[in-house]
Length: 352
Image 1 (cartoon, rainbow, N blue to C red):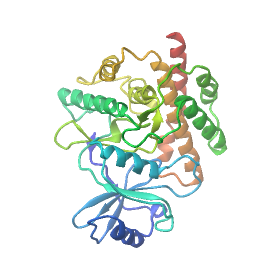
Image 2 (cartoon, rainbow, N blue to C red):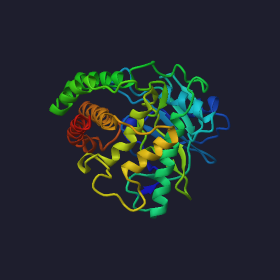
Image 3 (cartoon, rainbow, N blue to C red):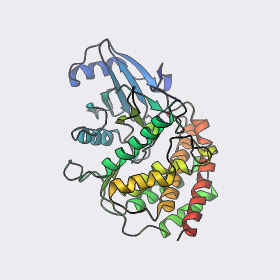
């Protein structure tokens, strides 16, 4: 299933002062000319995302949500910064146009960027594409993440974009703390096991100063309307400096995710979509590696991290400030994903 990201009327809980936004656009976005129409995109579990339309142009606005927030989450200013840097290198990202840190304008920090026309493929099985197009789409995914991981972060102005060293260890600590603090969302035995197992089984000599996206997957990239080629990588909220193999394993996770935990290639892989082994081999060839020996650890880590994010959605839903109206449905993936993460940890033990 593919198409443009759909947008519709803004629900009451996501409304803001559109006139104040229009005044800010007039003062801060070159070439802006109203009147302005605001719609909210479907999806967006974390930072609510809106389509802004004028008679001659369309824009996208990303803002922090309202309500109780984790201190390190919803960093729209970081999204703005990384896309600004990457756009200057010709990497496929939307062109950013302005950042507003004044909460008084619409109630929270936000930024505005160009709307990139094209297609989003929500289903990693790519049922609407031919086998050759599927192969090309996955190859574009692979080459794009390899290109991202090749950047010299100092050379592109992102040398201080993240803390040096111990990326996975810090991520495990961060999401463990986030999971434990959200008492309203409850506890899970698999998550509790992983919180103990992951720190004790960290890969040695991991890289930690490469740009990582943190959420690189099929429905977070925009493909061209007329060919299976990536035009823009979207949703940079979790980006930082870190371990590129951890970032790549998140992309690989779709081959190992059980169907009840989300979209998956584990039970069906249509013609044209590469095997996990071939996809990993292509990335290794592009990045000068022979193999990824700790891949199962990294997949376990990513499943744990995503499960912790889903756990946070459960908490935000119970508090009434989740971004997506379908949060209850999404939260049902939490327990199966936590179980799958523990299964990958056991697989990593067997592969030693």
